[in-house]
Length: 103
Ligand code: TYC
Image (cartoon, rainbow, N blue to C red; front, top):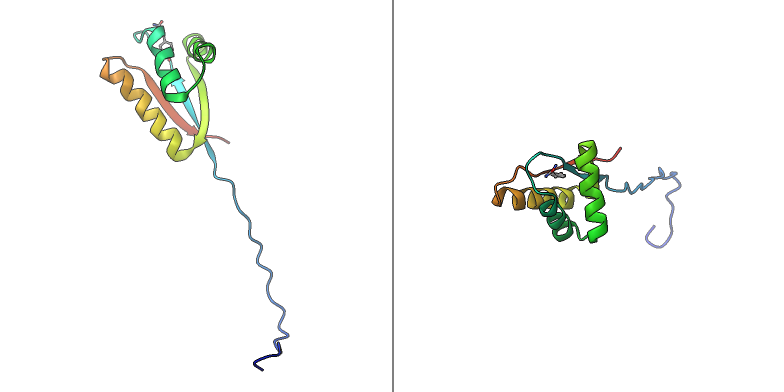
């Protein structure tokens, strides 16, 4: 009993599936008041993108209404969106970053 495995009952196989955490998009929303250069500044500071990439993202939001900036885990996406939105608010701009889960 103590040194022999007499248990012949088949064990249920437990499948351990590790789900990847869903990524969340940070979305830049266009407005009519925030200066283009300020949007580029915030994108570079908060999302660590190059001048070129910041300019492309800003112009895409400017022309199309919105642009996906980057994807992160939920917490990081929400923190960065809040920080970037607050940077605009501090200057009195209606600059807005939102988040949404990726499909
Ligand atoms: N539309 C703004 C302007 O013409 C610039 C701008 C671009 C503001 C993108 C917000 O998400 C934005 N000054």
